[in-house]
Image (cartoon, rainbow, N blue to C red):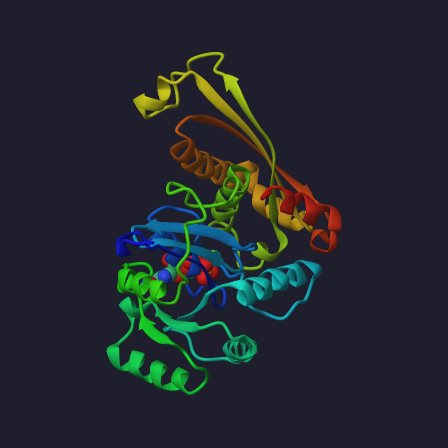
Length: 319
Ligand code: GDP
Ligand code: MG
C-alpha cells in the first residue's frame, strides 16, 4: 500500500512533572493557548492529573499535569502519588520542569531518585528563564546533566512563551506514529464541573494566606439553567450578556477543616467570600458565555482530607 508521508501522525502521552509552583499549569495553558489548569503562586494548587490535548498537523500531544511528586502524608497525597506513578509508567515522554530561580533541594533530589526508576525518556525544562541570567542557566544545565539522563534540556519561559514552540517540536520526536485519539477540537477531558470548581479554588487561593490551600476543597453541588426572571439594571456591564435571557445557577461548597478557616474565607462582614464569588463568577461568565448566579457555601468538615466520602465526592466531579 502506498502511503503519503503527510498523512502519518504521531500521538502520545506526555507527563509534566515538577515541584509545586515551577510553572506546570502555566506551561499547559501556554501550549494550549487556553486556560485549562489553574495558576497560583501558592503551592499545591493542582490536586489532580489534568489532560490538556494539543492537536496540530503533526498529530496530537496529550499532556498530563501532575500534582507534583512528594512523599505521601495524608490519604489525599497517597491518591495523588498513584496518579503520578501511573502516568509516568504509561506515558511516552516525561517533561521534568524546574524553577530556575529556586535552589536545588531535597525535593528535587527526591524527584530525581523517583525518575531514576522509570525508563520513559525524559526532558528537562528549565523554566522562568525570563527572569534569570544566562550564566545561571548554564550552571543549572551543568548540575542536572550528571544527575539523570535527559534526552533534551530546554530552557523555557512558560509565562512569556520562550522556546515553547521548540519544545513542542522536540516532543514530537519522541511520540510514536499513531492515529489521533481525541477529536481535533477537544482540548481537555475535564468536566465543566471540575473546571468551575478549579476557578473558585484559584480565586480563593489568590486571596487567602499560605496555609489554607492545604485545607480547602471545592465541590460544585448544582449547575442549573434558569430563565432570568427580571432584567436587572444594576449589573451587566457587558451589553452582550445583558441581552441573554439564560442564567446559569451554580451552587458550590467550599470544604475547610476548621471554623477559623471558615471565618477567614468568609471575611469581615462576608467581604472576602463576596470578592471570591464575584471574581469567580466573572471568569465563569466569560468561559460559559452566559450570565451566572453563583452561590458559595463554606462548610467545616474536620479532617476532610482523611474522609473517604469527601474525597470520592471531589473525585466524582471529574468523571
Ligand atoms: P505549578 O504549581 O507548577 O502548576 O505552577 P503555576 O503554573 O501555578 O505557576 C506558579 C507561579 O509561577 C505563578 O505565579 C506563575 O505566574 C509563575 N510562572 C510560571 N511560569 C513562569 C515563567 O516562565 N516566568 C515567570 N517569571 N513566572 C512564571
Ligand atoms: Mg498547577
